[in-house]
Length: 226
Image (cartoon, rainbow, N blue to C red; front, side, top):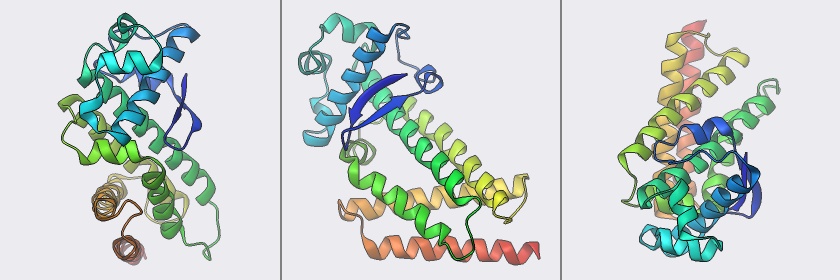
């Protein structure tokens, strides 16, 4: 696993399977030293995109500020698109880590717990503490490969939502519930992004309406299953 301080300076890791999904990663780092270099590159890229925008991300700038040679950057990430794709996958892995934690913590809670509100608030917090994530997703520098990574990520997130719904007794482990979960994921993603385009703290009115939207949709699903 590669480790670096990203966004809020927490130590985070990029699992091997997430790294393997990177289409432009020229070489897969095997030794700890190589993984550390890759993590440092992403740490610098995260800071640059958050403070100066994606145009500041160049192989030379990454090498200088990460304290490594340009050749080492080229060895793993041969161009700006590859750096952006690696950074995008890093963020997506973090989002999926957060979703896994939510599924585990919310699957058995009582009905008095606001599951929808808790989940929306958790992802709103992610947007708040990762300005680099916002800068990348709201900018115009996402490559075709990065967008494909995002589409695969959305499918995995929908599967996790389905797992949570099934654990909570809402829907079944079937195609219909997966479609419902995809609608929840896609609508949440769209509204969340708009809320944070309006304000770096997230527009509270939009976030509250998002919670109401998902609660109402799930209530309809529960009625159909009765």
